[in-house]
Length: 426
Image (tube, rainbow, N blue to C red; front, side):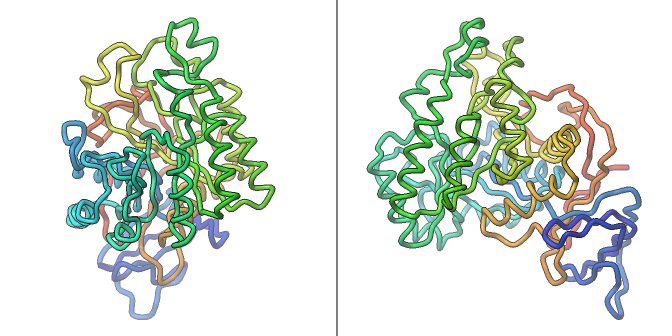
């Protein structure tokens, strides 16, 4: 398939390009920027006048819910949701049922995903068997099966010695560990940020200390072992300050934040809307503002959706009894654009946070428009306005805090490997 995408605003953070130009695609690759290669005859021409052409988005946390949680979402529904959100590569956490702790399970997931339209799927393997935090998995075998990194996801890690062994093992073989800093004892039983709002609402709290105590342990172990660690879903201003200090000391750590957490805070909980029950919890306005600023100045490396589809029954209960999580893969782009507009951040820098930088963290190709590179592209209208609803989302999980909210920015086309995997109805 030869595709000519014409007259779009081409944004390529890696190469510093921001110009109105054409992109030419053939045999799954980008074969021309600005000028068509010799003897190029397009099978399809896309008029991108008034649209942005950028690298396909790379999302660092998309729960596809298979195997084991098909009643919440299916691989088919969430792959479609990701493609309609402009995502061309995604990392999927191992907290399935059973967890992704054996090569056979990883290979089965990759095989299923490969035979469906939608993004490239990169599994993140379980760091410990059954995610129980006791016995390390066979990381070398899981890497051969296709795992890009290892994590406990949101499962508790209670034994620091096991974490130390995991880091030593990972450092020896060059594996990457993705860790969400939360001390299980300090967070036990909590469902909201431990502050004035939780007290007024009578909700059990999770203190900021739960993040910083765990973070201090992780950073100390990284200093000791030299392991390559990515910190997932920072949520507190104290945590941001610790990461800044560690980076200033030359520590090779990276970190991300969920797109919900740069827009919402504990103040949004007053309606007891269970769609706002998230992990980590929505923190104070001060925390939210620190996350927003850290994204702007580069202390936080990437934005992700932390897409977690939940069935309606698990949300239609009191806040504290509801299942945590929100569907977000289709909102990653508009929420990133909203943050950029509010913070005065250039579009190129915003796109970088959801394409090139996460691709680097994941260690996969993508996030650029290099000639010869994969034709993974997102073409979007940054001015298009729409309302978030069950009808406008493809995800089977309609559980988002932004239901009925207006959004600005809509994907028109998603190309994966040179194939149009999503085209918005006109």
